[in-house]
Length: 406
Image (cartoon, rainbow, N blue to C red):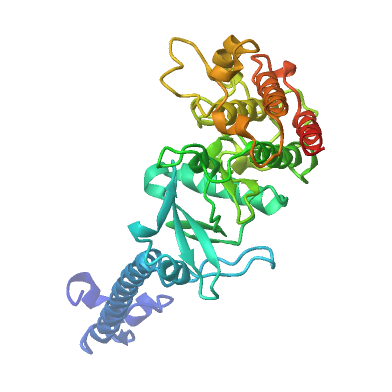
């Protein structure tokens, strides 16, 4: 202050207070001249620069975030992006653009199949390879689609057998999962058992029946007993058995397969990969599901044997396990047992007894079909321990092949 008691103080009254100053020259001599205006101006200028810097940084951060999100949306929507590379060098890298071009933009006319989690399209790659592109749809299954994709890729990556479908490559993006498989020109076993025209399937004789049953059995035997990581398929049915150019059967669709560590475990629940848990999924398709699964049983090789037995009886009778004939608790297994062995002609499909290509007599053909039927009945026993293993099944069918060819 310039007045009051301060005006009468001498200069030495302020000694030791270096930070004190006087506003004008008329104030107490000995005090430095105050320069508050300049200092306040400098302080205000620094504050303004600091505020401007903070606002600019915040604005740039918002703009950067918006750009990243826009790019991310474009990457997910664009069919022109390369897919993530495979971890193994023997699978070619393929882009989503090429799959888009190969299938005509996944157009409806290229659709050759569908399931719970996606659709299968026929396509031709740039090198002329004809393929089936299995595209999984996240909208239908949510997070389970990604888990199903990883399960199937895990099985196909770890197994290799002539009676298992092989994978050409895979393609994955945040909203796009596809498995590229060889195109099976002869379709599925189901399409031959139940052709659209209602007539007998092409080439369906007794030798074909035995060969197809043997191919499926060999594929399952490998999965259960000889694969590097043992596999329980969990969804064996005619639509998941494909026929190649030579009419050889290959087992396909491992979307809910279960990888197990040690087949010696009592409950076979050891998971080799957390992605292979089948919790929350129906362990197969209606009519082919082992009865113990309905009681909370874990996926097992015995469950696959049951599904194989149902499919074998279905091939012999050409009756679906979900046929309207099987009502009020009656099953395909029970229906066959009712007629076995006194009235077999009523349940055996005619093409098998004709046996024109097998060059067998009717009596020989009848014996072969009966033995296959006995095998199917054994595989569909209600008690899992009572069922044979796939090694036993494979051996029995091999003996049938030898006897029918001699």
